[in-house]
Image 1: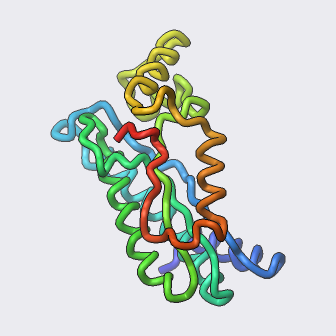
Image 2 (image 1 turned 30 degrees about the vertical axis):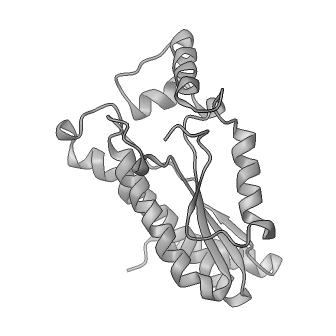
Length: 201
């Protein structure tokens, strides 16, 4: 049975393709409802699975809708975004690592099936981008972190210290990375994720 969300995304993709003649790039950045800061053995099933279900569902629905158009046109790029935490060993990541692993795997599977049609599927690992962090957003992921302005600055400073490079990546740099990956210059890259964390993994 097709859900209302699926139908809406499919109809939107059809409308965009009809109006413009093609869909060249699809990039899913829907919030997943991650929960962090709680030991896995103390998490509820709902808190663990929410990000997995939301992340896989949104990436699958948008990728599928775009891919159907891209197969017809023989080209296109589908991008995903996650933190890359499935590859790391940071504790207390809660549902994030499992959700990232599921999306990593989905990207690989889609790339394998869509590659023969000229469609590339790949992703970006990025996390802790300073411009995207607010006290409210951090508290939504980790309820134990109720931060004032000084606390938020300390968190951002701590993220900078976790990188191999001197500072955290900026939002514009992640956007530039996405633009490159979506371009023909990145043609050989598919089925994998680019680590844009400044090596915090």
